[in-house]
Length: 288
Image (cartoon, rainbow, N blue to C red; front, side, top):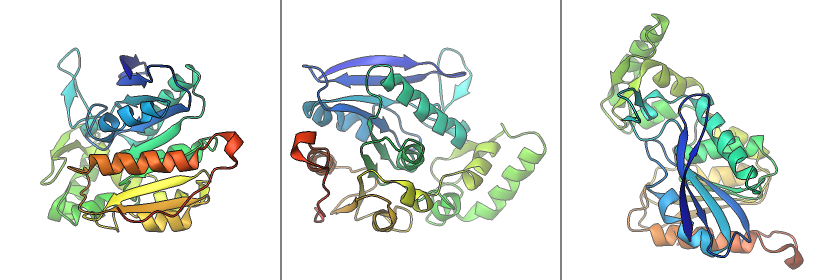
């Protein structure tokens, strides 16, 4: 595997990433990897999947959306990161990365997204029906996610009503860029990003009928099904879809990275077979 650090320009902050290619060149196409909320291209699935995917012949782009990490700086003291993220910007970042891949000969890459990146992946594939396959890794449901996540202690925690009202008041006062502390992960956000997350997230279950390409939705058995609706998505998908629940597995796949990798590789090998072998097929998988 050959890895090149890349920078992809936007109209504001550029997207940093890593482009991974098989040593002998890509023979199977391309893959775009969308990272989870407050994560980045060098942690989690965007880090541990490329070696196996390039071994299959795929060229892989793992990249930071402008909403990467919680907060960071670049070449000044101006802050950037997930505390400032907006849904429309994240959707545009994925489109920009897809154009970057298309310019290199990968016009219809496989899409793989983890958590928030999985939710965004569903929107991306709905907007790009030429996508050959979609892999969702613990994608969250999107609609009403802020309240539901807060109910289990994340984000606004038991102060959801209070912080929602405070965020809206700041936005109404023209102070949407003011930072707010939250009691749960990810601990700090701007008022306008808080409101954006309450009102603008795509609903993966509502979008599921528009996903007509083959899809795989992996979750860990330690994850709440109401937040990560693998089986409901598979039942509603407009194309062949498989839900896979991994045993002894949490949201970040700690200690189960190999099981996730094996599941993804096996499914892609079965689903995107060479044209000479016939049409793509989906086999219903067992829990692993």
